[in-house]
Image (cartoon, rainbow, N blue to C red):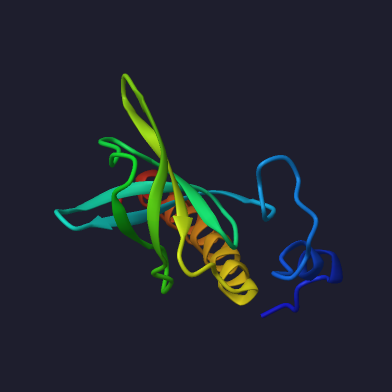
Length: 136
């Protein structure tokens, strides 16, 4: 695995006192599948962004504000509370606040997982196109 750049390590330093807006930690923008496990059920979702302190996920039936949930993405399973819920016509998004916060290595691990996921999706699409073209 490639070593993270000094800038990336700095961006995810947990003891960095700089806060931008309401965010206590910079966000890693993503669009990868995940699962949100509540006390009552497990829901498939899309992990939209991730930081040391929380995440934003998009799902068909959002959890209510104040509910606890476990976010499953790759091998990571942080526990958090829904602190924001936005419902729309075709689903919605929830904001999770992690307790305890993630480690820098966890965020970097999800980044690596996302990169592998995208590469695997491209390979699978190419293989499907080859099968279609060759009639196999």
